[in-house]
Length: 100
Image 1 (cartoon, rainbow, N blue to C red):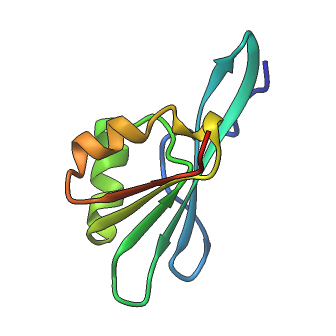
Image 2 (image 1 turned 90 degrees about the vertical axis):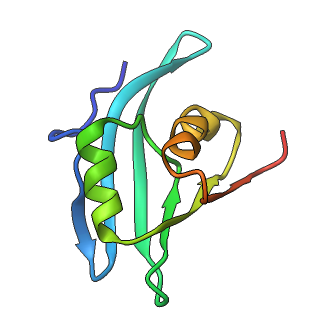
């Protein structure tokens, strides 16, 4: 299984208004995959999450402090794993998912 990059479950700045979050490894069909989310603060202040990783209290608080979480993006089927957790925490966020 691929080992995730430490520290896990915390925002890591990449550029102005862009962060990544390395999450725990996940198994699909017996194969291990590392997980990584991209977090973007849009010009209007909305927060856009691409490929959400597993949510935890500290990560939820860090992301919420950036602004209102409004967009949850799942670019393909493997990235759907944690969308429901994020929707539960941010019920006003709109989820976008690629067709299966």
